[in-house]
Image (tube, rainbow, N blue to C red):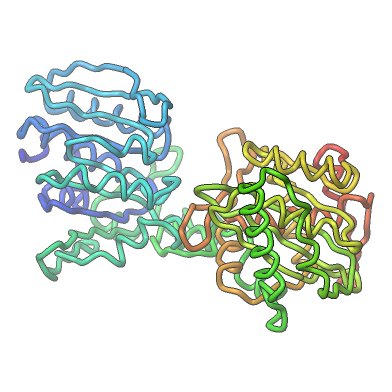
Length: 495
């Protein structure tokens, strides 16, 4: 690969990256340290020399456009004449994405796309995963992408850390190391299957040539930025490149631990008996086509000690369905059962749900009615009444209301839950993201261990079921009163 033209100024750590020809390369670089700049420069130089294509998968369409714009800047700087195109990428799922590309005189292409498992498949090209820690479904993207480089192509992965629950963090610290660049230092570690790993925090970047200036172009120091930021957690992750799972976690481990109770069982014995009875009814239904009543007999000997509130997050193939059953004791929601239904037929899910809602202690349920959940929510409303069963669409506004309500409930000690690793990880997996419209989005990585935060949303729905009937309620804590408008008002006055 050719070296960088003098028209393209580089800091020392950027030159290290561009001149490192390792097949597998990953870099953690401080915010605004020029990660995409160096990665796209390498792609342009290599494409001009080798004639091979490069595909840049970015966190979103806007980031994809910015990455291709940097590639065009480099192509002009090194005197390469290129053509540019904007076409559509037809994914196997039927969704289309904007595909941006530049074509160099030798026919080599540099292609930009928003990253997801669809766009990561089917290429025979070198790959750049740009700001990979920010990619949704990062593990699925990685699984779909990696086979495309099997026959000798290169992989470049760059990002700043965004917590520890994503594939980027796992790769940087878990994949075998070939060589390590830490600031100006270099260490040879191993060879076979290894990654060349680059790490540059803000102080190392400045030492190696990154210029920091104020609004008048006068030099400043990293300390000026730290003081202005006024957020130690953000400074550590964004500038010092220290991954923290607490930075963007909506519910911290400390908050979750505060409501855990080791005496509570996630799945009491009656849960397994109820699921088995529902599955038996399903087999009977397939044999006779006569729909049996829900298996209430499986709960005949179960003694609940408080009014029951139920939340259900619905999935079918990819995600779990989770039914969270709370019983109210002394105005605190104690978990009575957390029922996990993975790849379970709707018939069985409905039988289990209706058996619980048929209990005399049952007071109110909230059910995810988004997409595939609409049928279950409607069926439960028809049988038990819309005043007792509420379907909630997972719009951005509703998810924010549910998430905030759950957090307030935990902060006020309003719940007691099982001390279970799967539940804990699911509750902790939801992150709060600021959007470009200055609102917030609440979402989580989909994993085999925790699904798609299914326990989080089931519990949030149960908390809403237990609070939506009220108007305004006062909480008393350390001598101070707080008043909250209940989620019913937040969600548009549902009751």
